[in-house]
Amino acid sequence: MNLPHLLLDIDGVLIPFPNTDQQGPPTHVRHLVVPTGHNPTQPVPIWLNPRHETLINNLLDTHQLHPVWCTSWRHDANTHIGPRIGLPDLDVIDLPRTAITTSHPNGYLWKRDHVTRWAADDPLAWIDDDFTLLDHEWAAHRTATTAPTLLIQPDPHIGLTPEHLDRVLTWVAGIPVQGHVNQAATRPMNATPQQREVRPAA
Image (cartoon, rainbow, N blue to C red):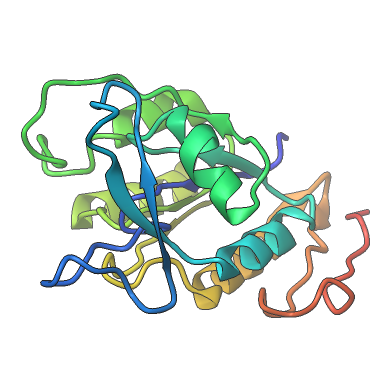
């Protein structure tokens, strides 16, 4: 069985929605970026949390998950987002550029059909702020019939928190690996690297 995938959205997860004054949370640092196809004279403001470097890299250092960008930023995630918070280049689900006017054209998140095909029968944890009830029902059905599936839905005005990553780690620790229970670390994700030392699964 392949490693469980960790699918990461960006907007509403790593980049929280701005407040009514068009400012990000005080925990986040403002950056100006020029995504692919945008006018370079009109950079886009984004807000990123420097703490996410340690939180996410601690999770990746357990080597229990395959991290993947699942975002409308597509490959720009490795150009503009990851380097600004100290993340390595990650694989990218190459989502199509569809002509839709809503995130839920069929009542569920537009990315889901593409994720279903991409992930096949592999376990996955997916962090996105835009799931609907139908997405959560899909995850429960997929867990029961295909592979363990975890959806985590941050508040888009707050974004990713240590508790979200703790849930991922608890989830992956319960997935059998070659007949054994996965021995992923279960310490909080804001622990130091020394506290988070883990042994490979048997």
